[in-house]
Image (cartoon, rainbow, N blue to C red; front, side, top):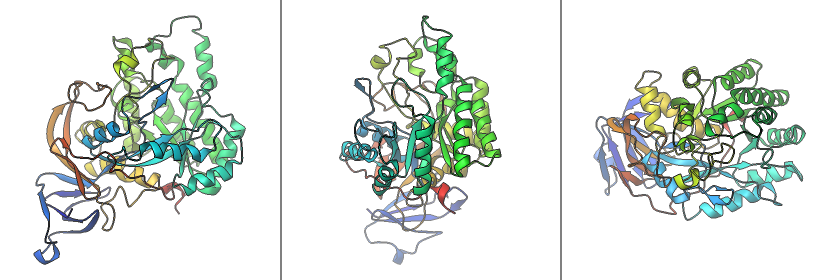
Length: 462
């Protein structure tokens, strides 16, 4: 499809321009103040977006669609996840591949992509989880890189579940990743602190409100500091996923002061809701790991976004139905995770842009260009550069609405932001030249999404 978008304000990470944007087939052809008739294709759809922002399609750099966990599967499968993403202006997600039992690392990516292909209605890239070192880790990671996956994830907790890796194997992973220019992403919670906290309440009930006690902010602080020291000793970057606390942010700042290149992501739920919800009826709906913190942590994290210590907002979208969530009232066994991809844009605009913390260009940076750069997808994704994929979000900044369980599109059937008043909405979303969302109607087709082989992570670029 050929499309001319006119009368809008084009927004990138560093500027706002009054320009028209011409899309030919699946690429951005050019940007100009005005195109002459002779420059336009004969077959052309014209979209007049006066009063709207035109920006790159958003990237949710942390999702768990179709997650298999403890004998069940997450509510949002690949197709459902990609549809709700489109409603939130997201044209690309970066999901996670498991480290399969008795298989080498890259087999997880091959399996995950075989599942997603034919299902996703938007584009996707992959992070690969590593839970053990039982072979030639350099060779295995070299094979992974050949598949187009240039980011891995390790856990500093969940020892009993088999995710935790001891420090010496972690150093092997770090060294191999540095040689191969792969980005190590880290779920940072110190397992020893969590275990010690658990012993203090042994043989007692573990209701949801105890999760912030067990998985304390000090556990996040220590893990970031410890793994930051390993990265610093090897002069390599690390990426902290879903930063949840003021103490975690302290560790980030201290690590940066020691010369460590720490890239940090937080999420809408750690920015806007608190652990008060864990003391109320239906607390299971608000349980994730790390857990929700205090209002002071919300404020500190917004400060980290404003200062630039936090450069990416993603969602950790991981959904379970109420039936799945309410199978347990024990914070150790409640299925963890909440919806977020659909709500991300509206929340960040409302609490960030509308409250004057930063302008719309920074929103584009946080939700599009910086994730694209961090994970080797830029400028094909996250930019409006001529010649790149025509992934476009037309954003109405004046629209007002209330987030609601009744109107959200997740198969979980609820949103943790129910009742939140928000401003702005994704009006039209274009994926590689095809309109996939138009004024509240999803037009995205199952299977039209493509796997995106990632290039060099931005932290390794000179």
